[in-house]
Length: 198
Image (spheres, rainbow, N blue to C red):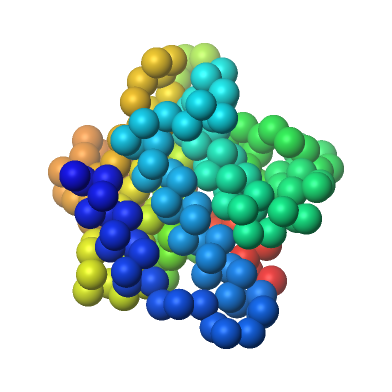
């Protein structure tokens, strides 16, 4: 039921794309599809999403690749991502996605308000073995009155399920290290796919 209501809110509140075959129209469709693919994984894993790729970065890669295959297939004839050297690559981990394929929007309230479906919330946790990056995918209806912005993410553990929650609740209800607030040094900020900023 939650999945259905989220999907309906996303589809119903997103305005129809402009009639022209413009980049803007394509981007609206891509964003909507990225959100719907991500939310679908919350209900049931798509068998096309390989089990070895099921982590936070894998969810982002799968949702984007699926959306592009549906609405802009010629774009996925070359890899969507860049590797650490800046070369096109089929695979990129969370850190590499952030540093090479996404651009920071900021860490403040203005950045939060500017978020759109397909944007990311990013964290870096320090562990004895080194830093661990974590990504959450934003799903936000274009008409904010229809439903609040949500995050969809895979927690990273093998066999774990995809999770979702209301974005603004993270700021007050999540453990401090997972709160998307400027006071949290583990919070890297909000990010947008670079191709959607050109």
